[in-house]
Image 1 (cartoon, helix red, strand yellow):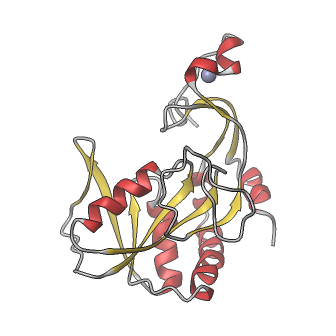
Image 2 (cartoon, rainbow, N blue to C red):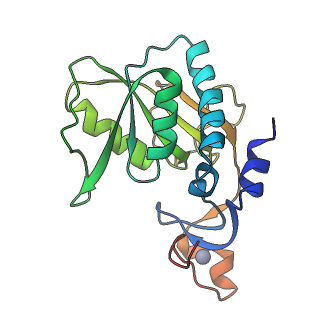
Length: 203
Ligand code: ZN
């Protein structure tokens, strides 16, 4: 099977430019997972690989929950591969919330799935939303880790920016490690270009 990086590159999902990430940081690269997941067969293959890692760990997962919008496709496919239920959270007045009649029971084992984990901020917000209904967060998962958090089996350690709790396992297929900058000391800004949100220019 191709490497995850090759899958992203071949799908035109490994973008180069000057990006404003949802964390507020700047980067020369951006991973547009939607371009990879537009092919359902690829999504299925990636999710099956991720599901195998999770099953092999022996974790019990009743439900996969993703923060909208980015995590939904990956989470849905992962839920299928794990034979689990799937729900998603979305922001209402900036607060991550369960809507649409989704219910969570006391003690339900929930895995939070994103497409990419950078700081894990949105994943953590989704976790908080379902924990309020009594759920038990068993793991976090993503197709790829941007290198700030430590995924299971990787030697690269979590950085201080990682918001995921250290005592809960985080599964990802691979690390995509590239520099991200604070807006104040971004070399791309120094060169005179302006950071833009991925998606705002047709990407
Ligand atoms: Zn910049």
